Amino acid sequence: MPEIPTIALPGGEPMPVLGLGTWGMGDDDRRAGQEADALRHGLDLGIRLIDTAEMYANGRAEQITGEAMKGRRDDVFLVSKVLPGNASREGTIAACERSLKHLGTDRIDLYLLHWRGPHPLAETLAGFEALMQAGKIRHWGVSNFDMDDCRELEKLAPGKVATNQVLYNLMRRGIEYDLLPWSRERGVPVMAYSPIEQGRLLKYPALGKVAERYGATPAQIALSWLLRQPGIVAIPKAARTAHVEENLAALDIRLDSEDLAILDRAFPPPASARPLEML
Ligand code: NAP
Image (cartoon, rainbow, N blue to C red; front, side, top):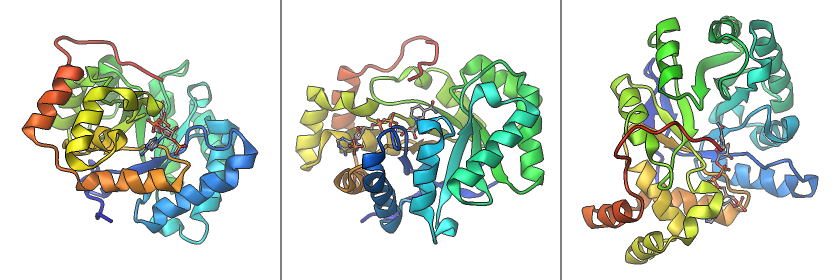
């Protein structure tokens, strides 16, 4: 299995470019064992980043993540998120403490504001700073931040944001127009969520056509297309171990200019600015 490359966080620490998503895990307790096994299998294979959130199944996805990390916390780069409605200064601290209990750990490596909400950004950042001081989080970042939000954030905390997690895949290329170059210029990693559009991407003939050239699957081509780009981390969710293995093997595929042309024709890059899309 391929070694997973890393990307530098603004402070220089490496973060893996491939992770394991957890949205939908914990929705049905009968599947929880299988879901924890899939995460464990990913860790066994060397996929060290897990992305979760207090929102996912009301904390149950965090608990499943905690089960998967048992006895190997130090091997994991752990990402979780605070809900916007909780993101006052004190609410952020309380939400993080609840998440730590669910996760069965004393620290989150990267803690994100899930999307913009009712609380002033400065308050959320004050919560993040207090959590950093207490050693409960090691880095903080944001999610679903469009250009205006990013500019506001840059004024409040220049050079401090460790990532922006946004919807990015072949069907959702709007960020290539502005947000992605802007983030790259500042060395802020972009974490691409729903990298295979929750499975909806897989039916497109262009992906099948490129996949055939490599004896690969459409999901692998969708991931390879993301992972070949500088500044991008992809976090596909897979509750099946076979999917976890397949996703990791996508790192071995090197798309060439002919493949990229086929994909560009089927999924054209943006010609003008578009509002950031969300799922
Ligand atoms: P996704 O990763 O694009 O798709 C997940 C779906 O694809 C699952 O049904 C999974 O099936 C299937 N799948 C995975 N690998 C596959 C493969 N190799 N072949 C065929 N099917 C495959 O969608 P997502 O879960 O929405 O996004 C990924 C993660 O991003 C989430 O889990 C979450 O951690 C994060 N996220 C963040 C936000 C945000 O607002 N910040 C929003 C959405 C998602 P199985 O599970 O059956 O294996």
